[in-house]
Amino acid sequence: MSIELKNIDNKNSYTERVWLSIFVIIGFILIEGILIAVTVTTSIKVPATMTITIPICSGIGLLLLLIFINYSSIRITINESEINVKYGVFNKKTIQIDELISYGGTNASIRIYLGFGVRIGTDGSIAFTTRFGKAIRFESEDKRPLVVSTNNPEKIITFIDQIKGK
Image (tube, rainbow, N blue to C red; front, side, top):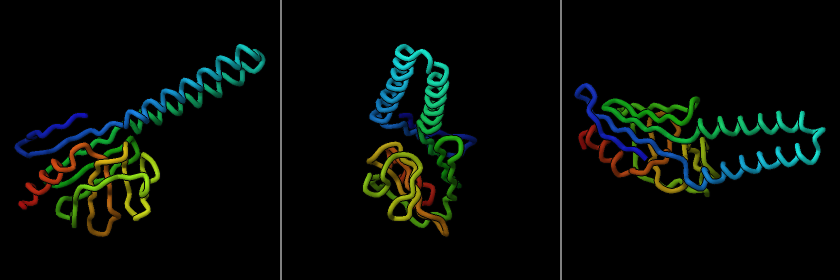
């Protein structure tokens, strides 16, 4: 977890990186370990399948590793004009501060989002979640609400309040 409040070109900004839950990391390591064990065991017991097993298991393992690296953290950056949320290479949302209708702390729960990652909740919101628990919900004009995992919803709310002059 890294949190910084910094001054860039005399403009305040807030940056936070939210990493995956330790349980997801442990789960990933276990899956990769099982994949390696299956590859080695199959190659030893049935050497004729080695030419098929090794490429398939290696390909699956590499794909899982790339997905894991891509979605290992969420980066939240807020400056005086906009909120940028980036989750992996392909998932980026930008909300203009002056378009915010409401924002506040919420709870990212399995009941609403049914897992981690990029999700559409049962309430119609889009969620970028790395874990269940603390999150912040942004609602803006003509867009679906955005829910983002965060370690510090109070700091984000305070920072946006200061920008909006509340």
